[in-house]
Amino acid sequence: MDGLQVVNSKVSLQPAAVCRHPLLVSASHIRLFVLYFFGTGLIASVCDRRYSPNRISVLNSASRRWSHVLNQEKRDLARTPVWLPRSAYVRLMTSPSAGRRDSEKAPKSHDDSQSLAQQPAALSASAAPDGGARAWLQVLGGFFILFNSWGIFNTYGAFQTYYEQELFPSSSASAISWIGSIQGFLLLLVGSLTGPIFDMGYTRVLMIVGSFLMVFSLMMTSLSTQYYEVRACCKAERCNNLRMCPLPQAFLALGVTFGLGSGCVFVPGVAIVSTYFNKRRGLAVGITTSGSSIGSVVYLSVFHQLQPRIGFPWTVRVMGFIVLATSAVSIAVMQRRIAPSGRRRLFDAKAFAELPYTLFCIGNAISFMGTYIPFFEAPAFAAARTSASPTLAFYFLAILSAASTLGRLLPNFLADKTGPLTMLAGCATATGILALSWLAVHTVGGFVVFCVLYGLFSGSLVSLPPAAVASLTDDHSRLGARLGMAFALAGFGLLIGNPVAGVLVDLRTGEFWKGIVFNGVAVLAAGTLLLAARVAKAGWSPKAKV
Image (cartoon, rainbow, N blue to C red):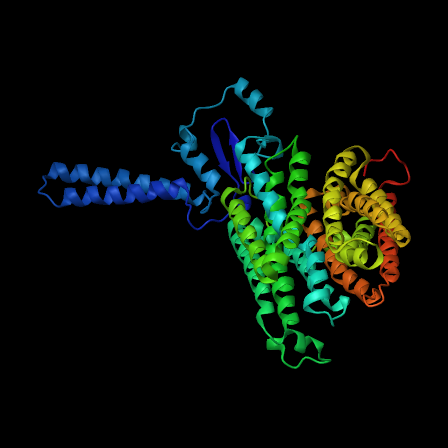
């Protein structure tokens, strides 16, 4: 573990890597506390009685020895960090050598030093449990975090269709799509900004605050339909009474508040799981990230089945209660195993001096700009351009999300052999070609095939970028800052893409071709830039694993 080195039952602490916790103190603090109070009590009890000159000499000798003990404890205390991680504190107090000074510890034999040389110097990824109940509970907790955060975001296509047809029929698709775009933008941006807070040890605080904001967001979204001026206000050309207009309320509740909450829990959800696994890390992370697609399918089904029966307000509240229950599981079971060696930097200017990384960041941002357009517009397209029933049109979004589950697992498995950046460039190119083929879709069967293939290839555009950044980073101590910068730029791409597509889509006439062309060209351009980043890093050789 960073900050704690275990060698033959000896514990050495590295103050640069410890995690500050206001409730935990070192062993020297406790020994000094106990010795002080017991020692002063003993001296007071002796001085309180009659004593002879012999007792005075005994007391003076005891006082000198007592002063020596206190000075030794103070010297030990000066060499010990004030705050310790909980796991380090437990190991320190239970270690056989915890109560002995360095001078009192037995020297190691030559055989012991040879055996210890084969052990890792610190508790690292190689010492991960790689299984067990506690490790798989972290996978469960991370699964539910992505189930709620990305699952609700991937469900926004259902909200978009309902807002367009029922709640805000006179508002443009572009205006309504800003709600989902700001939600995804804040999810990525806040997720990158909360990295240093996570490094400081406030994991549970982030999860509690984020879960509260997500539940609060959905409850406030359900209240926006209780104002009886909803239709009249939105039909007006200019809305002068913002307090009674539900569009700003939906933007603040479902867009801003939910984006802030999901951004707070995003980093713990993906960072904790990887520290518990080594050999099976790919499987564990794959199961965790599949929560986003499975959550989308579940929330879409809940929305479609309950909204006609109990209405929009109570449907959204039921979704909020699901978020509350599953978030409680994550808060209860998730616990960080190791502390980082230091605080993560938010910005690394030297990274953009490297051409491969710069090309990747631009390509990744353009990829997020176009990838999610079908997830926002698929139900409206199916209803307007195919003969699908309203029920089937709604479930095209669920088909996209279900296929995306495989798209997040299978390419990650293949990327271990080809390299993550190579696989990402290929999947982006295939996704762009599929997006342009959307122009030829006019039947229900054709749209089903398109949704399956598009979800299969586009899923990798979300799951592979972290591994691609790692392959472009030689110094992994800078990996956290680079990941944060890449996802922050991707958030800006996500913020821009869907509103632009909404402007290009005309719901009144059913014209979608402009938005489809924008989708395909954007993802194809992203694939070209990602391929350029791969060539700049390793050349044209297909054997290079990047």
